[in-house]
Image 1 (tube, rainbow, N blue to C red):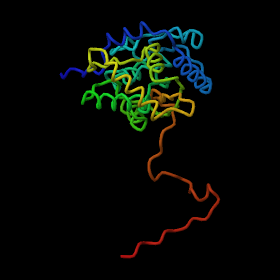
Image 2: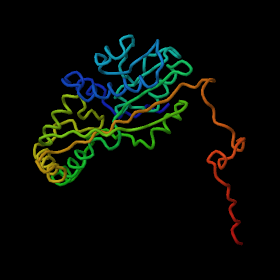
Image 3: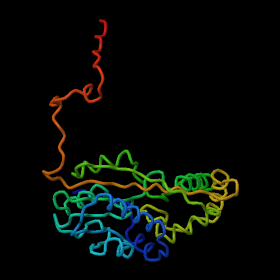
Image 4: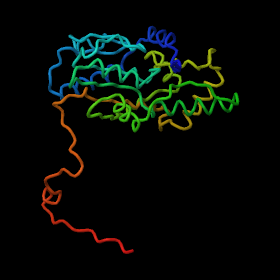
Length: 273
């Protein structure tokens, strides 16, 4: 069996999370998920939250169990009617594997909601760091996790066996005094570079200063403040159940679209040979 490729250095990620001192972005995303659950209008008796910050959820889902986002989730098959994967999937070494494990942990008709940072996240910082490093060192090093694009994530839900899969995104833009203030915030959130292939030495100050200068040149507003983009993707799917709506077979319709729209049906003319 081929060993799983290590995208994330889990030791470094754990260390970064341990020194995190702010959860403002996680708080906002958890509040958004709370609103989604209210719209579902259904009680959940055995919820489970996969999260590095369980304290955030104590008031939102006080009866929920919580576990960390390890590569192998310690879950019981069909043991839960709700599973929330809280803003961790972008660090997963095996994203599809996390989705499959989450589906197996759900009882039939159980709800999965997962959040992760999408491909537009920090695109400004990534661009400026890459340009600065290329100019000053002649090369590039891995700095930001390769985040999935939303157009691909719905397909991954289907691959994992979820019914009624949906992927949608919310763009959050935050203003900072400069790039160094943004980097301090990322450190406070525990979201700094934990890639397995990262450089194992600190980034040179000249590179950081050049990246900050480029950031201001390209992305500053009229007051000299920069904007950082966070794309938050929310994945929703249900564990399959016989009670769920099923698609009809092609050609099995019993009513015409024209009748439903109250209009006349127009026959298409055949193409000339």
